[in-house]
Length: 136
Image 1 (cartoon, helix red, strand yellow):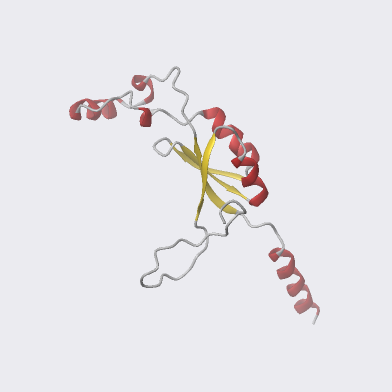
Image 2 (tube, one colour):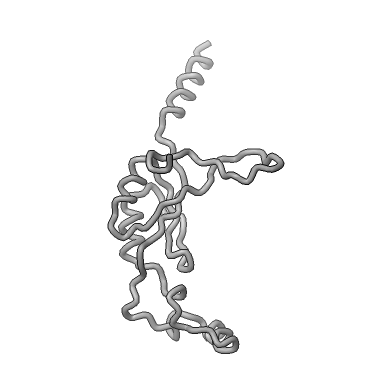
């Protein structure tokens, strides 16, 4: 009986923990000062760019601004990764943390990444995500 009571108490306590979700945090701009694609990219990548006539100085090639990533990850529970093409970083955060992140002046948008496992149903293309107050 004690084990059942303990198990129920533990399940109730876990259910009360703040929900952590994974989010893409998109930034308003990129730091363009000091970017040198010849130092940033591998020689093979530069060769491929030149073969197709692509611009090495295209803004999508610039790295995500490190100060932005540091500012967001300081408020989040966990850093997950980043994408220079999205100009975004992915973090794990709860509702309060994500609201603080949204308020940063260099954050353009925040989008939840589905972290819940569910069975796919025919004709369903929607991702499942616990909405935060601003998502609703």
